[in-house]
Length: 229
Length: 78
Image (tube, rainbow over all chains, first blue to last red; front, side):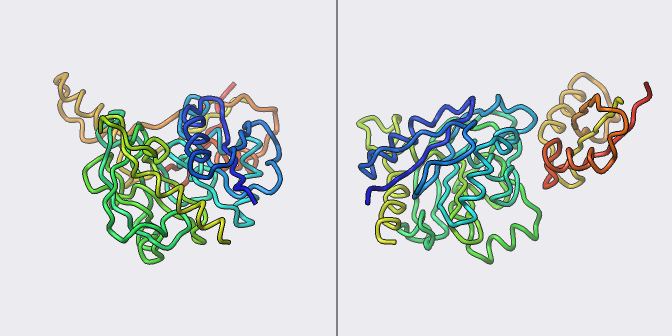
């Protein structure tokens, strides 16, 4: 059966179309577009993506308002049933605010908005998002954020490491994140939040400044894992 | 009923904004500033008789992120 992915749009999301295009190109199936005010998700979704952007203008805290929107109750419920959820950038902030992932994303340590391609390494290689990566595999994926400084208390960070729930780490100084964490997984490995934008790196470009294709494998992993499930 | 919620970063959580403001104060020649922490003041105009437990729930569910922030509730005078 065709891969059935849904992309949520909040007021102020701006990477929702890129996310839908990435999912469509890699899965070959149309991605459903879902509005934040909907109270229910479409039936039989295989995958939910929360895109980047500035939902609700980052009012109160980045992701805080979106995390309480009607559709997020349905997303939390779906995640509880094991439906995989990917949150990128603002989507990661929403996932932490909604309590689906531990920790919080604070203002970048250097205070500045950071928009550039950064080096990452794959850490976890067993989740449905990361199973095609080799441990320590180097990736280059763009970031574009002001609040990407991952924070959690030491006990939480120790637990994330012990449980192999760090998906990606930065291999260069970016935003001050605790233990260079760029992406974290839920306890069951089916919710991933990450600040870098894999949906902006799905096609090799003639000019490297236009991005690469290192994000592609993440979506291929998901499509492959769900097709064989 | 006017109520003020003071949301502050927990002790030990690094405050890059506070650090930048601290640096700017020093740049303006203000000596003797040991530390700067930036928080948020939220004023609520609530129905009379709203109980503390309800206000606490508002803080925990939305107004503060208890992973990084503490909050205090102050009943303001009329």
